[in-house]
Image (cartoon, rainbow, N blue to C red; front, side, top):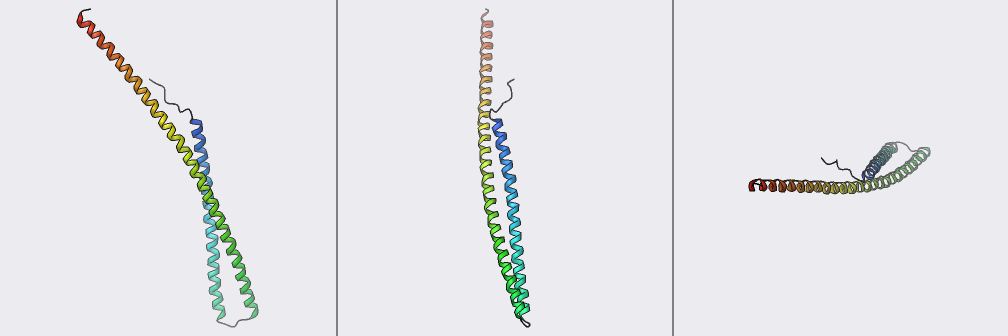
Length: 154
């Protein structure tokens, strides 16, 4: 019975698998940060819409200079928060895309080593089958030769 197949690059395969797992975990973290940035932007946009609605409601009454200045200040504050949220989202999208590319690269590299392992294992199995077939052929030839001697009375 032949020994079990041992892939000579098993250590490399394990290393590639760990790199892929690490890259996938990093990608998931970056995607979660991107979703958080999206939620922050949505919150700022909701606050802006609510602020505009309240401002329109207040304008129906008497306006004074202090209210106008407060409204303007709040509008500028929302503008800054929206700009910061958009910038944060853009940065999060960029880092998430980069992390995804790193994960895909690690995955391709692992799959390449796995394909090599499969090809080598298949070649190994074919070699064993060939050796077994040669042995069976040799046994059949010897058996036939013995039967031939027995029928000749030798």
